[in-house]
View 1 (cartoon, rainbow, N blue to C red):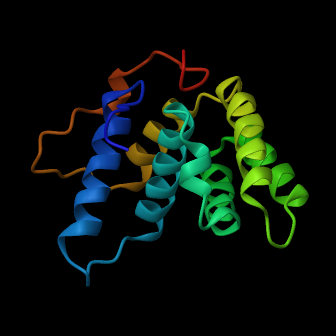
View 2 (cartoon, one colour; view 1 turned 90 degrees about the vertical axis):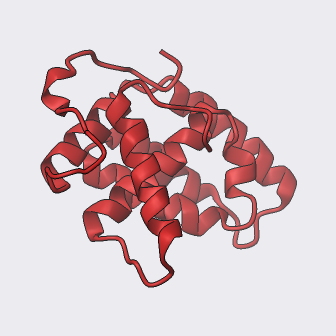
Length: 152
């Protein structure tokens, strides 16, 4: 998921930093806030790149549940609601055809969301992550543009 950088530099920065932390040491654990951001960024990148079906392929329900929890936590209520509805429709053992079709419908719905997901990710990161960074993170407060979805 390394080709989509999100609308705000902080979205990409946070995702890359969390990927790096997760990969650096097997014993490194993410804090609750880091896990929320990681799951939101990972899922949102899959949606933005229109790769939701392959992302959900082997672990559709657990990944949708983690994404639902993450988007609920950051305040993306419309995204969380769409995920809740998708999980409610999910058969106990979803077929690959069902998953592909559901992923396409869900992607289209999420790409058209009114939730400002990137702004919500940036806001959550600003509030919940430590301010110190050795990689030159810029303050998020200066970013005032609002996104309405990953494609806008």
